[in-house]
Structure formats: C-alpha cells, structure tokens
Length: 317
Ligand SMILES: NC(=O)c1ccc[n+]([C@@H]2O[C@H](COP(=O)([O-])OP(=O)(O)OC[C@H]3O[C@@H](n4cnc5c(N)ncnc54)[C@H](O)[C@@H]3O)[C@@H](O)[C@H]2O)c1
Image (cartoon, rainbow, N blue to C red):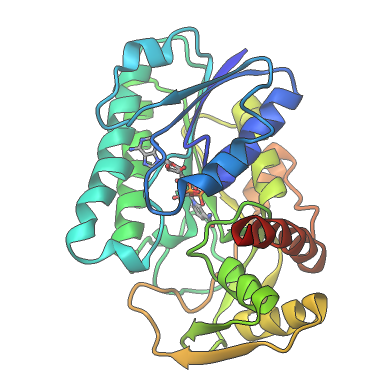
C-alpha cells in the first residue's frame, strides 16, 4: 500500500499525508515548494511528517521530473499539486496554471497508463461551476468557470475523464468547496482575516461581504479523499462540501467572537473570477462514499485560530 501524494507539502496535501500514514499507508510525497507562499509554512506543514516511518519526500517539479521512478511501486495516487488562487490566474501568470494544473496532470495520467495504480484521485474544485445556478450545485449542472484558474482545473478534470474512458486509468475527481482549517494558505480569506484579528491589523473584503460559501473543514476533506482512494467509483466526479453555507460577513462576526477582537476591515470592489455563492449537493458522495462532514463552522474556526496563533508566534520570533 504505497500512495503517491502530489502537493504533499501543501495545505490539503499535508493533512491527507498525515492521515494516510496513520492508516498504515506508505506515502511518497512530491512537492516543488512553489513560491506562491513561503516555504517555511510548507515546512511547518510537514514538520511532524518528514521523519515518520513510511514517508518519503521528493522535492521535484511535476512538469519536468522523471515519472517512472516516481510511480514505482505505487498503487494509489492522490493528485493535489496545483497552482491555486483565482485572483492571480489572470495575465502573464496563467502560464504557471497551464503548466502546473494541466500539463503536470496530463504527464501523471500518461505515467499511470497500464500501470499498477488502482485509483487516481484528482483534486478538482467548485470553481469549475462558475456562474451561480440553482443552489445547491449538483455534479451534473453546466460548467461555466469564471476564472482562468477554474478553466485550468476543469481542463485537468476533463483529462482525467478522457484517460479513464480511453485507457482505463482509474480516475476519480473530487470537487472541493472552499477548504479551511489548520495549514490554510495565506492567500485565503480566513487566513488573512484571522491573522489581522490576532495581530491588530486590518484586512480587505472583496465585494459586499454578502457572498456565501460552502466551507469545508480540511480534516473532513482529507477523510473523504482517502475514502475515495479506497472505494470511489472510477470515472466518477463527487462534490465535497462542508454543509456550512455562510456569508463572509457572518464569518467575520464569528471570528471576532472567537478571537475576542474588534475587526478592522474595508470593502473593495468584487474581484473578477470570484463566484457570488456556492453550495454543494453532496448526495452522491454521501451515498457512494458515506460522506457526512463532521466539523461545524465554529469548531473548525476554533481549530484554525489555534493554528494561526502558533504561526503568528513563530513569525514574530
Ligand atoms: N484549498 C481549497 O479551498 C481548495 C478548493 C478547491 C480545490 N482545491 C485544490 O486542492 C489542491 C490543494 O490545494 P491547497 O489549498 O492545499 O494548495 P497548496 O498551494 O497549499 O498546495 C499545493 C501544493 O502543490 C505544490 N505544487 C504546485 N505546483 C507543483 C508542481 N508543478 N510540481 C510539484 N508540486 C507542485 C505546491 O508547492 C503546494 O505545496 C489543489 O489542486 C487545489 O486546486 C483547493
């Protein structure tokens, strides 16, 4: 039981890796420590993992690394490596998105053809939906991404389906809805808001704050990712939401209560590419994978705040 986890030093990747090791899997983690956010944070994500038995870290770029040795002895793949972020996906940076999200996925799928891989789980995103349609969003509504990031995630999801249809690569795509919790990326709203509240700083909210999201706690996302690795239907696409649809304004109020601080923020224009509302219909994941998110927003935020306190202390040293 050896699993290749791509993006293993990242927010979701490190959480998935920790859980796989807990369950007796061997993990080969690959990450190129992309400079989208500080390496120190990724090292912090891996600090309790690097020395664990059964874990091997490969610091390489999926765009150009040798794949035969990477795939050697691997029976499962969880493909989380990507260039994340909606706002930075416009303009010249798009090349990073085509390289790390589309081309790297196609290379991995080629390498998984005819091999020993039993399941290949791909981390897709709610951003493939785009223009808000009737909520909750089920997997079969039209896909109209609003950002170049969403387009790149959808292209890779389509590639997964193509390689399953044509070459039997056992792919499964999980459309995660905004994931939060310990280890969250510094470009994401919760991270920015909590950090400002803990340090007496101010933060910016894009739009009116009335936009709503279906926030998913990272431990729930990681659990279901491993369930998909064990028993997902190949060729399937599953929504993974947290069952917590709440507006950004409400989140800020809750954070203020939990941190005991007076938030200072300003509103900026809506950013192009941002969706107004998201909410997942997780019926399929519930029926086929037994998915039922366990962590409510308040408990999840508490956990992220505790982690942020440690991060702030570390950064202050
Ligand atoms: N966080 C969310 O809310 C969310 C929501 C939907 C989908 N997703 C998807 O989940 C996955 C993980 O997201 P995350 O929030 O943990 O992001 P993250 O940036 O923390 O993790 C991604 C990791 O991949 C690595 N990476 C990037 N390009 C690489 C390459 N070419 N070769 C090797 N490693 C590379 C990065 O260094 C990083 O450590 C991504 O595919 C993302 O699109 C995340």
